[in-house]
Image (cartoon, rainbow, N blue to C red; front, side, top):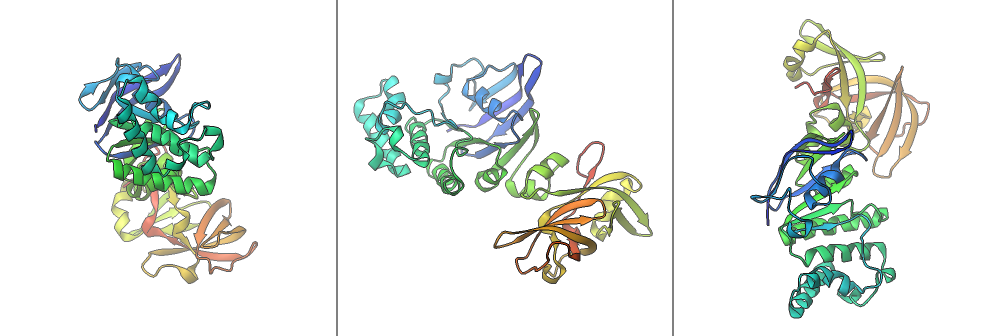
Amino acid sequence: MASVTYDHVYKRFDEVVAVNDFSLEIEDKEFLVLVGPSGCGKSTALRLLAGLEEISDGTLKIGDRVVNDVAPKDRDIAMVFQSYALYPHMSVYDNMAFGLKLRNYPKDQITDQVNNAAEILGITTLLDRKPRQLSGGQRQRVALGRAIVRDPQVFLLDEPLSNLDAKLRVQTRAEITKLHKRLETTFIYVTHDQTEAMTMASRIAVMNHGVLMQIDSPQNLYDSPNNLFVAGFIGSPAMNFFNADLTQEGEDITVTTESFAVKVPPDRRAALKDHVGKNVVFGLRPEDIHDPHFAPPAIVAQNVDTEVDLTELMGNEIFLFLISGEEEYVARVDPRTNYKMGDKVTMAFNMNNMHIFDKETEQVIR
């Protein structure tokens, strides 16, 4: 078991900086998820750790050992790829045992470790099959089993669920989480799916354009994003953003957009006083815009007149696509709401959970 440290790591491909001054400390036995849009540098950061790409600058450690110049086979890591990368001509048993055979493990030890991993993953009945005889979910378990038998210090998983259907992704997601708890090993998991990140991680590192934007627990990232990018990336549907001005009259501070105005709660005024008279970005999550008939009683609500442009019935909730003047936004409301397309309605904005961002720096104002 081992910690992992990225210390001012860079990766350049000619003029492109894929990983830019990346510093991150991953604790022993942690389940850390690197998340971000395609091309953000998350897979490159993982490949640097695996030794599949060469570091351009900086230091990378596994435990106390600097591994910049250590061969991949000597880093004591195991990697699970998006494509499974199974040998089609080998049985499941031989696929799982292959790495151990290369390292000249005794035959009895290989058998014990493969059988133990197969039992953990529930694939003991599949050991004699070839990959072509397996479903996508079964192939993914074999790929995980091949990593488990090596008993590495660090597991690296590069978008391992992206080839599975929606139902199987949910199931396998839960299995990987349980596997982490059972093995008590450091897991570093790359995905572009923020739902995977939120449900699996002990901490999430959000990347964009090769830069680490924020690292925190899933709930803290959701509740307290540091900037516009993180706020928009974490949460589904994404946070609504409105260009706005902050104005003050007496003690009241008001967020004024082109189409509506809402007052700031008293406990949030102090943080915003220095920004009165300035352009800002007002953010509010869809789940903080309520049908007033079913709004939670404890919220500080500001009413906004709007029109329903589209409704999406999800069963346990309804998505309302709303238009207020020039502003278009989404609300995630109680399933008992009976608003229809074209209805002119009033929505309750929960100002307790508002976010205000500096328009120039895109950083949150707290």
